[in-house]
Image (tube, rainbow, N blue to C red):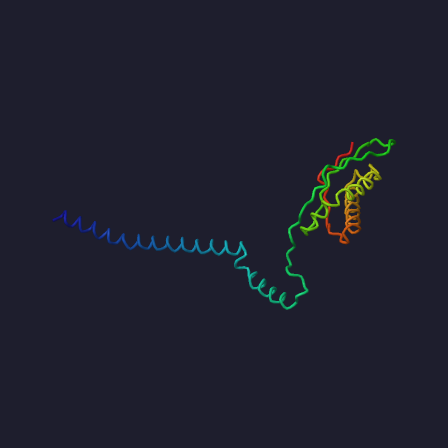
Length: 182
């Protein structure tokens, strides 16, 4: 009988342990569910689904329908790059240490139709740019300000040619992807 009492004591201990393990299991499940909810909410906020952009977009579309002549979207179209290949190579005056300038130029536009027009009028654009690049002071081009000034002059020159040839500037930016002076 003494053994039966020991067994009974063990059973009582096992029954007392069951509620504790159920409580632990309940706490673990609650924490996991809470973490899943927080991560799902964070994911939706970071992707913009809970930011309220949908309501703003719907309101903008309604306003856009009312104003047929206004801009359709606030977001800009993708910028298309048109390389002006091959790179430009011009020589400077014989009295300078720097003799040659090589520049690789890319033109940026958001209108896909302008891409084709730039390609069509590439010879006229290249001619104007060769003249522009050949008349530069190599010492001024050694500074960032000199390069930025040349970039803005290049954009103006391209826009001038495009305006003469097509009636529309079309091009909105110019990028120097390579700039070498020797």
